[in-house]
Image (cartoon, rainbow, N blue to C red; front, side, top):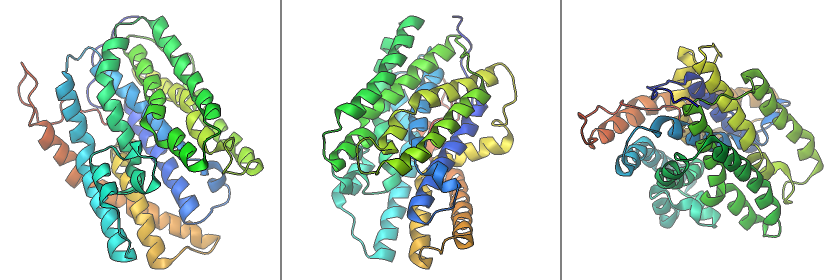
Length: 378
């Protein structure tokens, strides 16, 4: 396989656009479960937490694509990733805790806030810890673990041939259902933590993304087209609808954990198909100016939307079924997206620029923070 040039910013714009749709899936999942049901839509997104799986696979793809052959030290890499996620994490935790305290007179564990800010909260099996500071931020603890392990993964896997990447992809894809069955005897709370939150389990999805990103970078192109990949992902979520109706959610073989653990290969196919379309110069409908903009805002939207839902439900209560629920949903979507845009423009982007500019890559001039800035990572 022939190596291709290192990517610039938004070199794969369709992946940035896909970020918006994955974030929307998570937002609609929370609206359905915390506000009220919109018939049809809620059925499809009832297990939309699978959007987090998409982001974990995407992280692996984009980091491998960006840093393979880039010659960036582990120290610089980790600083860049910290600059990427930590400032907005801190702001969102402050907002989340403030809302709980000011509106709901609810105390938040100091240990939970500290663990969240240190990005270790998902390692603790207690829900009060791993959903403490900001419930949506649990996934950043997993991302932090991925970042720590990535330099080693890149050093080891980057030296391998395509056949090893293929077998690695097969291995981590098969390990997920084996874990799902193997941990079925645990209590519901422990099982949920071990399968859905624990960074070690979620690393399977990240590694799948890494080998896919390496393969793409070295010239491999998937056989699956983008329309087919989209159809597979949509079809998977439609399969979950009758499954959900047939199996109580509290049993181990319900689609709750399955929707997250088993979807990684489908999301990997979707990401690779979108990347292939970009590399081939084909329009996908995902790389336009507004899709790029919405994709850039998706990280802030992910961290903020649940806080907006909490405030709205506290102020107005849950809406009546029907039109009121649709209006409530629309209001939350508009307000949370507007706040995400402001957070991106005034917190996330300038903070990342400033922090990244503090570390100079040896042999290179100082940068303003936009150098090699990949906006496709959640």
